[in-house]
Length: 212
Ligand SMILES: [Zn+2]
Image (cartoon, rainbow, N blue to C red; front, side, top):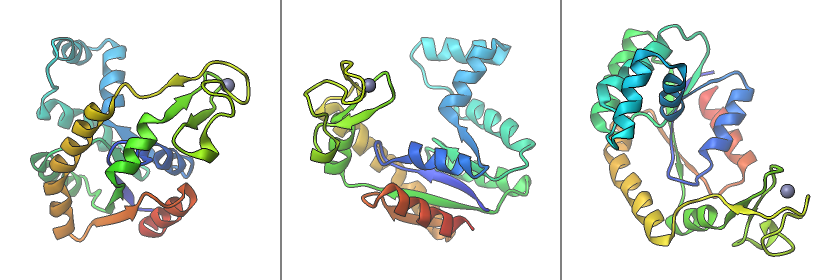
């Protein structure tokens, strides 16, 4: 199986698809998780990262690159790269790194979701501590009783901190930032766009077809 660089707007189902690939033996490399892991490890680097984030600053490109390089250096299985690259510069240095490490056998998958649908998925989502999840905007996914879990009767909580306006900003920022990255991979014939309105199963099948 080929490795994959996953790019998707908020609420497109990247998490679900990533964990399905993990079940197939993929190693999930998420920049967010890596930063959190480094911090909780208490290493010197972790302490530096914590200080940067606590001050409200962004962790530098160089630092994130180092973390990814360390992770990829000894990798023996196909991987999912999630949350990276976020800029064209990052895409270019990643490409050099993957060539260097002989890990060039990868494809880029973009999950495409219209804004309106992403908004409903994100803002309508309710979850329960028992693991059940609901969505008030879809008849078949709404809880039978408003705000209460069908399975255990507990009160449901909203998953997303966004309101419509802040979600819109987050979504549009993502689309704008991703545009040059998509073009970059398109020129390399690596880009595959999948319609995220399809069912999870259909999406997984398409991904498998691309990566086999
Ligand atoms: Zn429940």
